[in-house]
Length: 200
Image (tube, rainbow, N blue to C red; front, side, top):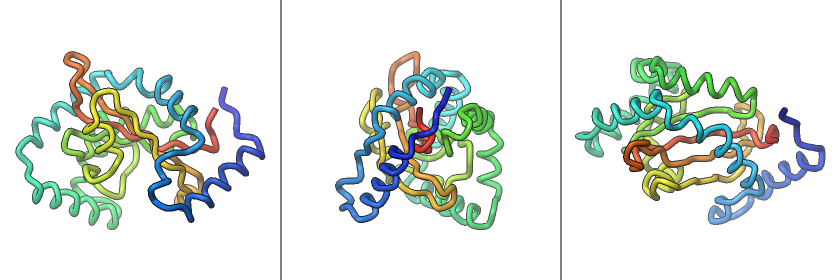
């Protein structure tokens, strides 16, 4: 059973959000909910990351994108951004229609408001599947990919708590490396956006 944070804990979240808004960027990597976020990933996310729905989709896209150069990646990312601003388009529709995106949507729904989004990235930092449309398609220039996939098979990155205007909630993104269960080699990464106000 999930319980909402106490009034004191919510005040702490609000204070943390205020502190982060005025803190230097170098202080943004840690947050006081790290133990709960790590437990969430270990207990409710990691067990299904070796599912063939996830692994097969990532490996297939790694093969498909093996020859993409930086210009091609930038072009895809720009196309995605334009489509996101326009409310949709062929690239977004293709990704959102995949079995992996449907699977992530089901996993998000099962967490009943605890998770705001989930998305999986390939070995180039490009989205493979997602529960919700992200603002960009390429994550390779961000910590969520650089501090997981590039850091090795056991890497876990807990980002700062930030206030999300669209959902009007305090969120933290938690990311970890995805591995091939047969070889133990990194193949991609996953990011889970967590509403810290609804943590256990």
